[in-house]
Amino acid sequence: METNNPNIEPPKEIERSPSGLTILWREIVRDKLALISLIFFVATTAGVFIASLLLDLNEIVKVDLFALYERPSSEFWLGTDYGGRDIFGQLIIGTRNSLAIGLLVTLMSGTIGILIGLISGYFGGTIDNIFMRFVDFFMILPTLMIVIVFVTAVPDYSIYSFSFIMTAFLWMGIARLIRSKALQERELEYVQASKTLGSSDFKIMFTQVLPNLSSIIIVTMTLNLAANIGIESGLSFLGFGFPEDTPSLGTLISYARNPQTLELRWWIWLPASILILVLMLSINNVGQALKRATDARQRRG
Amino acid sequence: MALLEVKDLKVHFPIRGGIFNTVVDQVKAVDGVNFSIEPGQTYGLVGESGSGKTTTGRAVIGLNKITSGDVLFEGHNLAKGGRKSHLNVRKDIQMIFQDPYSSLNPKKRVADIVAEPLRNFEKLTKKEERVRVEELMELVGLSTEAIFKYPHEFSGGQRQRIGIARAIALKPKLIIADEPVSALDVSVQAQVLNFMQEIQKELGLTYLFISHDLGIVRHICDHIGIMYKGRYVEQGASEDIFTNPQHIYTKRLVSAIPDLDPNRRESLTVKRQQAKKDFDELSDKFFDEEGLPYPLKPISDSHLVALPEKG
Image (cartoon, rainbow over all chains, first blue to last red; front, side):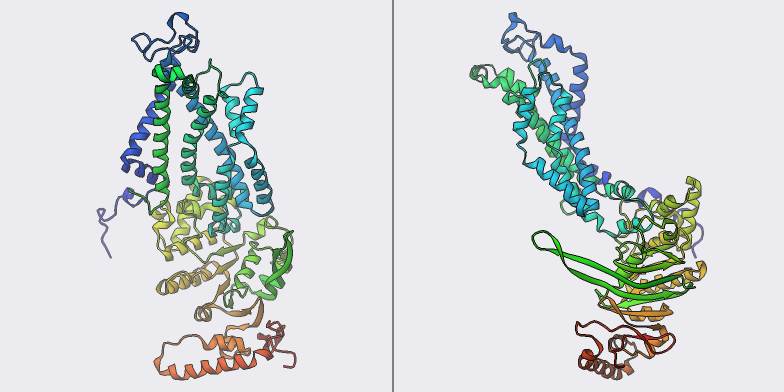
């Protein structure tokens, strides 16, 4: 037998195999575009949230008749709109609002979707049938119409109520995805084994099955985030988003519906348009990298 | 008294069809099975794919719903009530699964996998739990440092040992081993089987051993039941089945066991062909109109065979 040579024992760190999160992170680092996108997104998010704390919203949205349609200058970095309001300030606060809605909607719809998907997929049978008919009902509703009706009917809505109403119609996709994955997982023997070991169904669902779905959840939530920011901006652009005293990226872009603004006053709508394009692209880049990481055959790293 | 007694066990799965998704037919996976296992013994359940042997084992442990019949474990009827009933009795029955690759959760460390039954049934502190897990790892011959690794870092045989460690964590009385070695390669099979026999002696375990490999069953089982299409064709002590098979199906199975001795190759081939001929010619007589075996009839104290009525 070997003598007790301490050098033979390999260091423990090397033996560790990469966990799911490490694989996701490694894929992002390997994909330079995704890494740059991630840095940009995090920097923008942190930037607008911190900057909006320093800015005074009331000051920004106050109408100033002596400064209508000012060009970008040292006083107004990105000029002013038809009410003499500073575009740069609106851009910062608008980005914060749009991001906040996107994040809130993604988190809330994700939570509801995961819960319903996991329950119906894990139990299957009648429970699955009931939940899925419920999901079907929500999917056939004309979402956009109902959101527009809500926005017109409720006179004074906030970021939160707007997020809630969007969440109510956006949780079905992730619920169906999680359900299909849970249906697969529950047939695996480790679930059966947990049952024979006396674990309760809920314990198996949340501590055994859910961790195995973590990477797919991260990927879907990331890609949903981009989509949700887009939906908010789209509604605001159509005029069913926030009122003008609550700027968002969509409201800034909607000024371009005025042909004169579109043609002659680029500073009002162009920065917001570029920002939303770049933001969504970068979230998408990160999401695609994460998506690749979940499939070993597509991985780059 | 027998540790486990299974009486007229039936497990039927409904086939749904039609517009209203009504039950149109039943798959009779297990159709009237009787057997009993004495403490400390190994009972082998043998049969071809789809014969219902795994379903029987899973019904005993509560993974499949029992349509009718009784499962008496130390006098408690486990067939009454759902999976949640008799929880304290059920912890004395554990299972070793067929596929060591999917029976361990890939996202859990070995320490958590082995500790799962302990966390469900025993209130241990973190420290006590750690000690118990390390004891179990030593018992199954794995190093105690391995408890912080993930299952995929182990080989098939090692994973099956982890599965065994998990199954014996609660010191059960009965272990249902559902083809525990069929996913392993042959050199590892012997290792795991010998190890299972060692811990059987050490811990006084009783095995319900489900397998289609007659060589293995002959090696480790005291009593054997042969299943065909959800019913028993023959049941008896290991000796009875292998030296004195009575049913044509059993004869054919036994003649199919490979032998390494090249000198006997010729005679075995003749035997196999004879068994096949018998099976083809006599299957009308040995099976009823639906092709199912007849009810069992005793031909000696320990030996029961599904012989036709006229004998």
